[in-house]
Image (cartoon, rainbow, N blue to C red; front, side):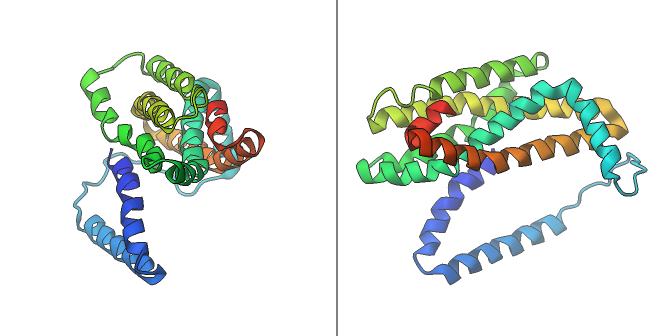
Length: 233
């Protein structure tokens, strides 16, 4: 929730500061980083009582661990890859669509806002549901519903339709995020000292999504157009 709040507020603040010039933008970013560093160093976090007993990482052995893990938890890895790709495409191709719609309609500039808005509260809904079993199935089902809704984005050419579809699709995709994270948490808790391998592979999969996402988004936009690329996505 806080991460998505930053994504929602950041562009607004950035736009307001950028009016005064690039130097102010860089200076503001530096000030924010200094404040964040001060808050982080001032926090008193209790040290972990778990002894990892690991000194350095051997790439070959780590890849073997990842391969063994991927054969067991590949559905969750695939889902996290999909969600990451969707997020990456929205923040690349979506910025172009946002600017284009803003020129056509007074509410067109809300394209990215409609995508980010549900992420501010859907985590609280998942917490209230108290889903302790079947998190993978819930995540897969919600992701499927979000994909079906997003596939209808090109049915009508009105800006209102596009914004509504993005909002509804984002709600369901956003609901799958915390369930996927919770599943990873279950895995890491069960694995004990070996949890570092699970953390490594999950982080790498998400990083991979942000590498291939912009490439996929750009290719689809060239083939079918910016709006229709989200239907294909």
